Length: 113
Image (cartoon, rainbow, N blue to C red; front, side, top):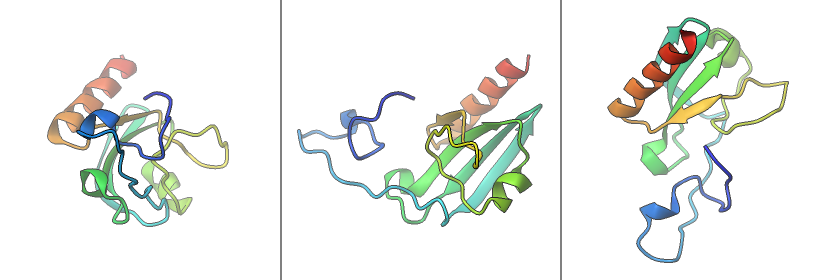
């Protein structure tokens, strides 16, 4: 989470030179659900965006107060944070690894009390 200063969502620390490569943003209409978990009023999704290159297109997203079917029915799942009230937006993102998945679960359990 933070301010995005560059056109990529990867950390600039991932690159050894001063030149940051241009990576395509995920197409929010082109996605595949890998896994999902509901914890109280939170929903954790691991989604693959085939058009995205960093982390092989995988993203772990946390949503609040919405079921997966409602997100799926909107036809797009944008992994970026947004204040647009017409679409459900994640409240948090985690590194798309087993460790990130476990941290997303811990995060939701903590907020769920």
